[in-house]
Image (tube, rainbow, N blue to C red; front, side, top):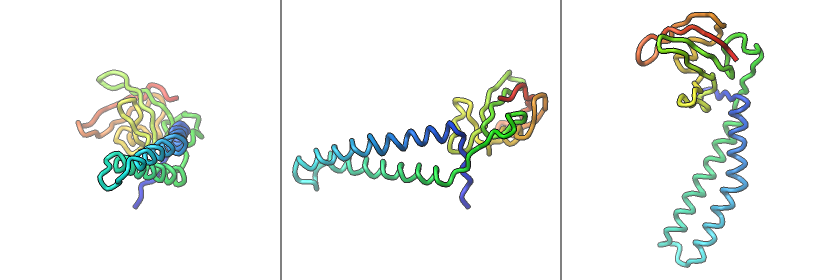
Length: 153
């Protein structure tokens, strides 16, 4: 079963920008590299040609992947105005270690290093649907962590 793809507006914009760059810049660049490599002669032993063809295949594959994600994704709606934690909202959580900021995003946008956590992560699952002041516990790989929701944006 395919996992549902959920995108925030910023995540969709980021994918669309990457797609535009791939189609308008990267494909043209690799086509020029292939053309230049062909001019060098024998293609069977031409490393530049083979490298350019591999890059072309990678770019084409990435274009296909992004187009598929964009056509199958469900957009996260902030219909509740972030009165409760939902996809697309940013929450400030207080734990015994201090305050932590998290934005709840779809799995394809997750980047914990910058505070974007997947809707399917233990912390997101624990706080989804809760409001400011609620106390929740998340079962993480390092054990249970207790949080208080300080703010939601």
